Length: 366
Ligand SMILES: NC(=O)c1ccc[n+]([C@@H]2O[C@H](COP(=O)([O-])OP(=O)(O)OC[C@H]3O[C@@H](n4cnc5c(N)ncnc54)[C@H](O)[C@@H]3O)[C@@H](O)[C@H]2O)c1
Image (cartoon, rainbow, N blue to C red; front, side):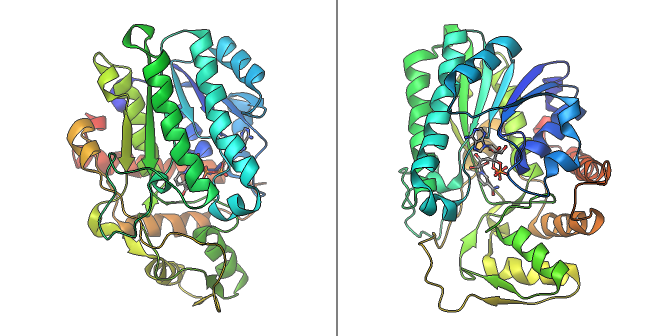
């Protein structure tokens, strides 16, 4: 997998205590990597990080990405071959409540990380995770391309647009090809999958409602989003990191969209219907007089560049992603006391994903 790029290699993940970070840590450990993580305590309770018992399997630093000194000390001590930067305030609605913190964590956290890499001055491949929301949203029916204008109406989206600019600036100012530092950004779609217990995200909100037998309230049923199972963008980040580290990889130090096939994008209402159907019981209804803070309506991603230049394409369709997600929550209890069950459920999804990718001839499995 991934050309064996991670076997025995040192990887630093920021945001490893979160939803995507815990999946990525699990996958990298399975690929034979030595993993260090840098993040605040898990942001949710229950937490996938705790449920998988990851703290005992990695070099764990609990610290703030805005603490440039600690970050630099961590990079200096661990000397990672690869860095995946996921730490962020990742919720659009929270960003309306804590805009200053959102800008600070997302933008300055990235600046401190890149500065640590610059000052420690050793070769490594860095994947900075931004978002599909970094584009100026025009409510277009077609997918955004990497060359489309960046922007963001809400503080979260704007912060990720700025992160894109910061990375491009560091790349051209400090990381010339002779430094051996290769930095790319990854703009992925809305992620679903087991083990997300965040608030104000439709899947965890739905699972809580379905388990409690209450009605799921849906804010924006006509919204369109590029839903993906969490293993899709993570596999893409891993492939991008692996390719960056190869001969000629500096040409790939750029911005990349990773999303579902165009035909697999769905409206929020379709996702809610599918969740209730897969659960086998339950109900949802639109929020009455929904007049909360603005959220984008239509959001699609064009993934032509990743297909053409990385040979990356999604493996699972919407139905598989949805069914796997619901089955995960059915298999794993809503507390994090049963060590092993959550880990096994994640490894089962990762194994199935790798297997199907291999059958389909995905470039990263060859
Ligand atoms: N989940 C999605 O649908 C989605 C979609 C596109 C992009 N993303 C991006 O993926 C990344 C991970 O998202 P997630 O869904 O796993 O979020 P999450 O909330 O589950 O995890 C966030 C992580 O960041 C850490 N963190 C937050 N503030 C920090 C700080 N000040 N210092 C150090 N660590 C801090 C948390 O401790 C946690 O480990 C984020 O950058 C997010 O913007 C997520």
